[in-house]
Length: 119
Length: 107
Image 1 (cartoon, rainbow over the protein chains, first blue to last red):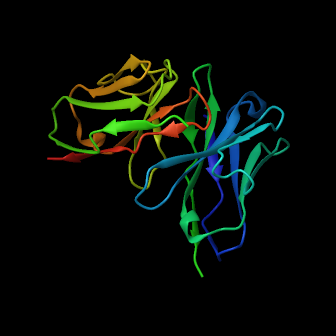
Image 2 (spheres, each protein chain N blue to C red; image 1 turned 180 degrees about the horizontal axis):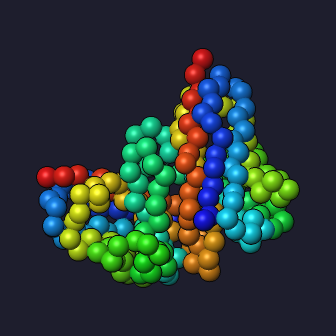
């Protein structure tokens, strides 16, 4: 079955960077994009951007442009999301999801990675 | 950016009730529109895509309607496992945006 497995929780200091991984299985990696969504404590879902599993093209939400980099490793079917210059308000659960369909939707989702930014 | 506004923000209901959640887009998104269910400690789960299409494996008590700017999620008969937060989403244009969520609680 299609599955996305994310890396474990991270604790970072303000100003540092974090890199979260998302390993895909059960489908042809190059046929779908991977999208990233985060949820801060007590807040809603926020889309960060996506990366093509086919050619690595990216689209980032303007809010994160310049601070986020999304990459893939097609040899291991793994997507990565790196966020730099971390602030306390970047503390959140970060999710990856498979994006697909003519009518784009996110399914399935990874289990989430908690990133805590604290001095 | 396209703004998505859900109502209500929270809702108390009983098992067996019929429940409706609405979502309005700040501009037309055609039917590039999805609904997700999110339970604490779990990943969000796709319920409805393309405004009206039930995702495989989702119970038929869930249904979606609408197009353009106004959309509705209906749960025909609430079950105990349906108490969660529900989010709408537009994928008409990037940045993709979500509604603020509707928390469905047990009365």
